[in-house]
Amino acid sequence: MSDAESATGFEVPSDPLAGHAATAYFWGHVAGSGDVTDDSIEVVTNDEESAHVLASIAGGNLEHDTTTRDYAHDTSITRTEDEYTLSIGCDGGESGEKEDGDLLGRSGALGLPVDSRGNYRFGAFSNYDRELLRGLLEGCGTICFKSKSGTVGISFVHDDRELLELARNLIAECPIETPVGDLSEASSGGYWFSVDDGAAPAFGTWLYENCEETGLFAPSRRRKLEKSLEQASAYGGDEA
Image (cartoon, rainbow, N blue to C red; front, side, top):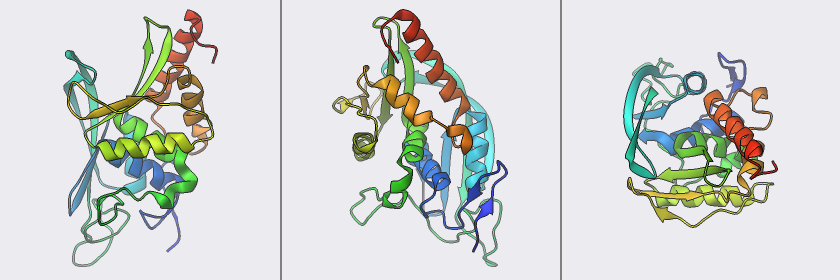
């Protein structure tokens, strides 16, 4: 089967587990903010454009709602956000033909790429670590400006410790030297780690560099990064 062109203009491989920038970005989002069962996948994002990109990659039904949740590092703070949920069925039906809910026309159960011991297997995306990491950051990461220190903060928060270990390994292998902190328990449950403040500007810039060429990014998240970098520069705490 040949690759199909998505509504956003980039090509999508016929195999959802094939090595490709689009599938790497998609599975990063699924791992970061998705819910996978034997016959469906749900992935949640706060960015409308990113939600439509994910739907272009994998099909499915997209719903919009608003939600109020605790801030990951301080449960005394709440925030209300737009929430876009992409629901994808993995059953092609009796005919086996692609329906709106199918994942790239694939029938039967399809979960996260893991081995028999539950370890993540993202080796097919080894040439697309940047897109995979970008999907992970947008799925379970935060970007902020730290007013007390005048630095940019980038962190990852998730219930799955193994997923965060994977993210730490991916960051360690990226071409930008990026020290990260140890995994810690989050006050809201689960675990988190952060990129060292001194490395955050260069890492964040690399992560979103040339992303317009593929459209595989959340514009609101990139704007948050750019604004944080501008604030840090004006503060004088960073030179990035």
